[in-house]
Image (cartoon, rainbow, N blue to C red; front, side, top):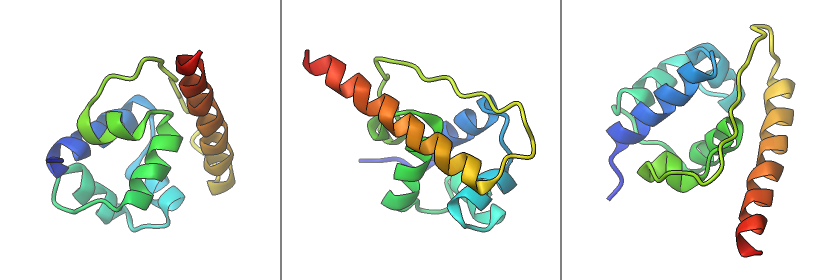
Amino acid sequence: MINVGDVGKRINILRKASNLTHDMIAEYLSLDQNIIAEMEMGERNITSDVIEKLSALFCCTVPSLLLGEQDDHKCIVLFRENKLTIQDFKVLATINKIALNQFEMDKLL
């Protein structure tokens, strides 16, 4: 069973490690920043679409985000610019998806 509070804590840790604010994540997800805060506190359920987008943004697998499973590979994402646009986040998420797919392909070899 997935514990929403634990998922929220993991999102909070990843967001802070990436130097992102609730507002930045909210803009990327097209949600209100209060919803992001409620998700991190475990007070709101998180849709699979949001989980997928956060997984791509933070370059982590869905199981690591949902269950706390350790990823074999680390993609450390640090945002040094506070003026990132929604397009910047989308491009980064796409690049991260490619990296995650490559990690999965490497496991098969």
